[in-house]
Each structure stands twice: as structure tokens, then as C-alpha cells.
Length: 355
Image (cartoon, rainbow, N blue to C red; front, top):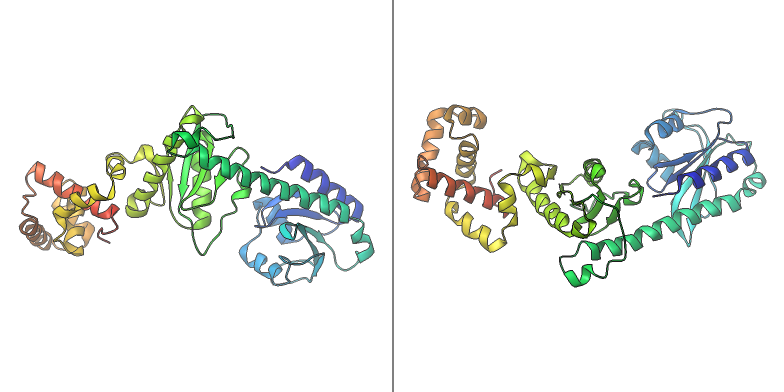
């Protein structure tokens, strides 16, 4: 990740040169470094330092002033309702791309001529963030090879990571973007469908939760591998766990391979095998399928099932009987129960499950 020490030195030097409170954030408004305190401090700066991220409302206020595309410092007025003091935002641009923002608290007493003296330092900070972003892209390409199921492609992987490692698959979102470049040092990321991440095993749960929350979708976490050369196996498990997380609410939003039990066997099956299993219950409508699945999930306990479904026990018995007639299966028989239960789970993985 970012070289925090270098960025901190730059921010400290800028704050000292300008005599103003300074903070440096990436383009997702995540705090990377902050300078020595000069004068007042507002709630926004306190929250940014304590929580390491600005709130959505404050971000919208700042973006209203065109900071994402500005080629130089932008003066932003105070806002009493948001408890925002007046400040200067200096976009950190390199090669016509904005990689972050330098923030300076200023009530108008910091002249433009003084601001310009910090231009070389701002350029260095922007270049550092751009280099980090390019490094992330290179690592993403190497990660694709490392996680490939093709042995020949894996042999071309040029990145080396220490073990143990865990792969994570996260469903991308059309509406939201996750700041993959802000993840902890040692985490490799590659955008795609799904998003691929490879994390030190001890960080896997935290990384999965962070990225899943950012996208608002679902994630799957594979098993840990001591040898990074076996990371592709963890990636396969992560994608299968993601399928389970997306179709089984009890495992959502983050499903861990090690917690999936028999669902691991179903997740390994291809579409044709799943369709063959699901055919057992193809004649059940959504209400019947949900009733039978809940009944079998609860070990055939009628009273608990009726309570879960919010129906009278006699209504449940009627539905179970109807399901037996339609499937030609006896739910009091162990083998028949298993066949129906697997069929309902397979239907879920195919996206035809009861809701």
C-alpha cells in the first residue's frame, strides 16, 4: 500500500511551509496523512482523523465545487450546518488523473502566492499516489495469472507473496465503487466479475467485510493456503462460496468456505448437474417449495416450521401432502427427504429458489 512515512513527511513539510492545518486523502476521501496542527480545527477534520474517512454528506459538499477535475487549488467556503470551516482543496493530479486531495484549513488569509510555494511538494505527493496506483494495476495483472486454473498461465505469474494466503471473491456493483487501492499492505486486488482479492490469511475476514460493504453485494472467502502457489484453489473455493452467499440468505453477505458444510458439495456442481437435481421439485410453486425447504431445514419439526412460516400447523400439513403428491416422494422416508432437500438447494443455486 501507500508509503505512509513518505506521505507523512510531505504533509508535515507542506503544513510547516504554509502555516496551515493539512490533511492528505486519496480520491475516495480516505485519510492517508495529516500535518501538525495550526490554528482552528473543525468537526470534519476531527472525524476524518478519528474515523479516517469523511462522511458522504461532507464529500458531496466538497465535490460540488468541482474538485475532482480542478487543475489547481480550489477555495471552499465554510458551512455552519455541516460544521465545515473554510478551506483550500488542492487536487493531487498526475497525468490528468486525480489520485487524491490535499486539504488546508484557511479562512482567506493564505494568499495565492504563498500557496504556490507548495506546488513542488504537491506534485511529489501526486506522483507518489500515481506510482502506487500503477503498481496496483501491475499486481492485478500478475494476480490474474496466479489465480488461473490453467497451470501454463500460472507458470507465467511474476508476483511473489508470502503465505499463508486466502482468496476472496466479491460481486461487483454497477452503482458503487470500492476503493481497492486503499486496502492494507499485502492485499492484492483485481477488478473484474467477480472482483478478486488475495490477502494474508489473518486479514481475510476483515478485507472481505470491507470490500463487500463498499459494494453492498456479497462475498465468498476461500480456504487458507500455506503455499501461495496453491492460491488458485482458494480462489476456486471463494467463487463457489460467493455463489452460496448470493443464493442462501443464512450465509449472506459473506460466506466462508469452511463454514458451508454440505453446501460445498452443491457449489462444486456444474449447471447440468444442478438442473438434474432440481428437476425433482420442478412442479412445486414458490410457496410449496419454501414450505418444504423450511420443514426439511428444521429437521422435520412441524411446530417450528409452522411458526417460522407464520401458518397454522394444519396448513403446513396440507402443503406437505400436496408437495408429496406432486413430487411422488414420501417425506417420511429418509432417501426421499434427501432427494427433495438436495433438489430444493440445487434450485436455489440455479436462481430458482423460493423467496
